[in-house]
Length: 281
Image 1: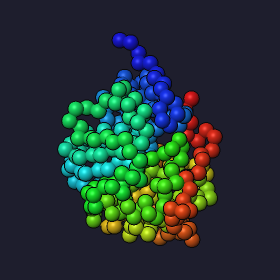
Image 2: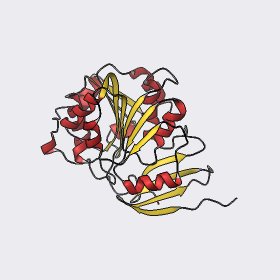
Image 3: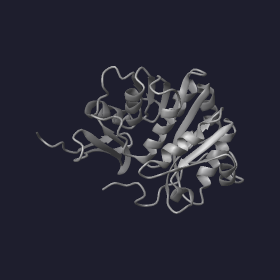
Image 4: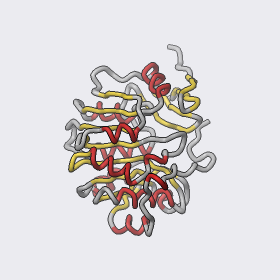
């Protein structure tokens, strides 16, 4: 059997590469401009290589009874890692994926096709535009993993955006986002203050070394109108290969400090990661 070979292609966001994992026969790493975007194992969609993806998956696992289908809006598609995971763990779920990079969507559809009957609709649109057009109260969960290169675009960081997310969710729904920052956490703290304007409950999931400011890294934000299952998420994230901590309540308020919400006119992208923070090869 021939070994899979890397694929490189120009997409809207730059140069995308699909690199095979030689330890897993049908697994691939997707990078765009050298930044890791997704990891997919076509034979085992339950295998999540990236720790932040595992943390979002813990949220999805806790969002309803085991196996119960969900209506999920994904903002940012990449190689569709989490939609594949959800289709496998919650069959019958209705998922809509919004990805602005048409070239990337074409590459993924060609090289990493979704299984038939996955219940996933993929649309080439801007995430903010699609979110604002979503019917009110139509989603159980919104998953946001949108990066322009290695930065969250400015128009997805504002009070107006957060309120659009709250409007699209059902009353018991959850918004979960992959963010990235490092000390002194000006961006992450402003995001917490921003989402506080639209949601009663916030939680943050990240490795202790990131929360202590020792390195730049991913942090998963969970926002909801009702209290999330913090104890359940804390147990699951603590058991990962790279354990994470769940900040909630008073501890999260102390972390947020006096940060102010960000409106559209003042919004900026998330910070540029330090050299080597997320690059591959």
